[in-house]
Image (cartoon, rainbow, N blue to C red; front, side, top):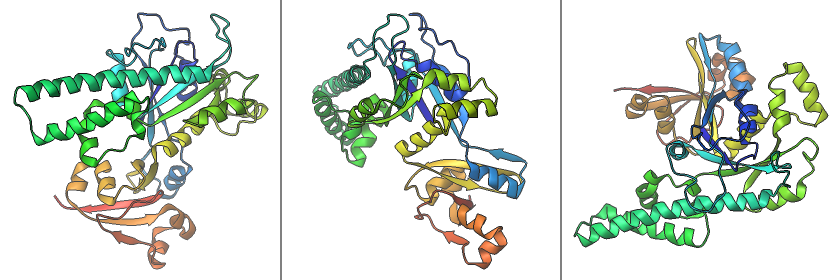
Length: 355
């Protein structure tokens, strides 16, 4: 899973990135020459993996991971250029975008925070960027048609782009646009920024943290939103676990920013986890809720999906209740599932295949 962190300059975006990844990247305002984003990979803490590792004692234990990409701070100018350039190319590879908005006085100007206005500014820029991409592609289609070049795929793409342009011209993000499977596939390569799942991180200071119900309610009318005290959370990563726990209690925080955003992201993207177990390896795999057994097999390796025969399956909760696989089988909780089986969160799979 890749989550791109975007935001205006001085929004505390890199502070949030450091809090999530435990890195110590420079948090001063980006220089105009800086275009390379910060990258960090963190493991998804899952107590179920820890428990499975204790039970199977494997050579390797592999957690699911999230990659965070901290993009250069945006200017907020509505010129459609915010998501262009070499660094912004990574936006296209992100599974979701998290917009960090400032909820503290600007450290360089002293300006009061305007989080709702900042959200409107960035989302407008994202829609303009998508609009420019769609218009340029539509111009190429029109030119091709004049030269007599037209096929079934182009017809589908043109129909999809017409809907895209109508949506964007009405100032609506593409994630709310309904497209047929064919239409969605025809424009998938553009990776429009407003088509991606989107969440807002309200970055507050310690003094006003958890006292922003009105702002959160206003933002939540249109977006999923979560609140962090960015500087505080970043400082916690430099403390030992016991010290960090004491300071978290002072702000009534029960889980770290990393753990809260992980859970929030899984909910936003509709992700679940399944597991593979054995003496060699215990591993967590992330798939979209509603994925079938073949899709889960393909997550492990393409050969498993191509030669899929059956999935041996039982659930984590049943394993914990029974204590071992032998009892799982005795109680009839061990199953053989076919291609169309919808994998459930916590399923433990072993794929039978032949290639």
